[in-house]
Structures are given as C-alpha cells and as structure tokens.
Amino acid sequence: MSRISVVIPAHNEQRYLPACIDSIKRAAGSIHCGVEIVVVASRCTDATAEVAAASGAIVVRDDSRNIATVRNAGIRASTGEIVVTIDADSLMHHDALGEVERHLATGRFVGGGASFVPERRSIGIDTTIAMVRLSMLITGLGGAMYWFRRNDFDAIGGFDERLTIAEDLDFARRLREFGRRSGRRFITLRSAPVVTSCRKFDRFGDWHVFGMIRHPGEVRASMRGTDTVFADRYFYDFSG
Image 1 (cartoon, rainbow, N blue to C red):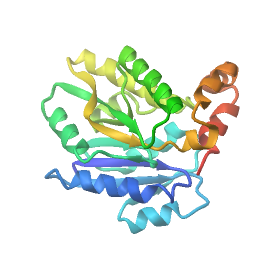
Image 2 (image 1 turned 90 degrees about the horizontal axis):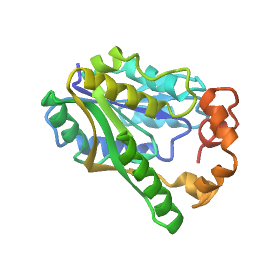
Image 3 (image 1 turned 30 degrees about the vertical axis):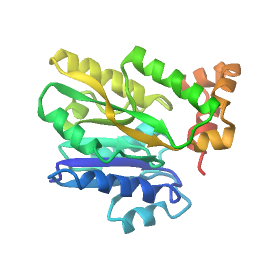
Image 4 (image 1 turned 180 degrees about the horizontal axis):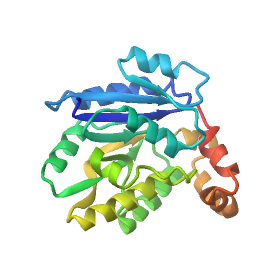
C-alpha cells in the first residue's frame, strides 16, 4: 500500500497534466515513502488518459458531470493512507508532500489546504487573488490543494455529490468541524504554495471575476443545483 496518494481530476488536460505530474514526482523525491498518482479522466476527448498512463499514473475513468463525484472516484481508486488532491493545471511545491506528512504525523492536524501563487501577474489578477486570500483568512478554509487521512475522508462521507460547485470548500468546512471534535486543527500550508494556472483569466479576462457580480443569480443557481449555466461555462465545459 502506498502511503500517500495524489488524486488529480482531469477534463481534457493533456496540455497541463505532464507539468502537474512532474511537479508531484519532484515533491515525492523529497520524502521516504511510496507515492501513487491517480488521474481521473472525466469526459475527455483528448489524450489525457494516454498522457497520464505514459507517466506511470493510475488512470480512472468517470464521466460524471460533477466534480465531487469525480474526486470521490479517484480517492476510492487510490490506496494511500494519506490523500492529497490537486487540479491538473496546477503545480505542486517541491516541499508539499513532506509538509503534509510532517503535519499529519504529529496527530495534531486533521488536514488542510495550501496557499497559492498565480503563474503570471497583472493588476486584475493581483486584485482577485487579494480578495481570495482575504476570504481564506476570514473563513480559515485554505484552497488550491487539499490533504487529509483516508479514514477522516471516509468518516465525513467524502465530497458532497449533491453540489455542482464549491464542493471543495464544503468538504474543507466539514473536515475542519470533524477535526475540532477530536482536538485536531485544519490549516493552510503557507510554506509550500501551489502555482495555479491563469487560463481562466486568459480566456475570460484578467478582471472577469468582478464581472460575475453582475450575474449573481447564475452563481446562486449553480450552487443550489437548479441551473448549471455558470458551472458549465466556468468548469464543466471549460478546457484550454
């Protein structure tokens, strides 16, 4: 059994996946336990699955139009005692897995997220990132990469498959509350930030997040699951 499993949901990610997997392998080289990589190919029409397999990753296919379901499928197929999830267009910090292992070994942490830096900078991107970081500070729910023990994942029922968006924040909130009941903390790794892709800024513009304010109904409808226009445009039909 591998000690750490890294699960990557992937929809048409042949362009970004090799760099993501390479970054995970570099991080794995700094620790002394087994690391497996699981790629969940979801509704792919490109060579995502083939690229993943050629890299040595375990490939799982799940064509659900629901990212929570896709994440759960990858975690169910993995074998590690510790699980890390990261997006296919992100790069893992070379110290990330070592930090995850070190924190969980103390028994004082239930898991957490990671801080992040964008792959490029602009005024619009910097303003957006500042807003996101402020939100993370207020809520205490880190993003970009989540890490936890498998038994804690099972105890809280995994990612909520009733949600079409924000399933990661919901999972983090429930994991934090579960940890509090056993005296363990949920934290954000600030010393090992994820490098995140700016492709949505490339596609929609560096100020596009502020444009969403003009259409709050679409976002709320996607969160309620009553309409998926926003989720489809921004997540499920997005590739590039």
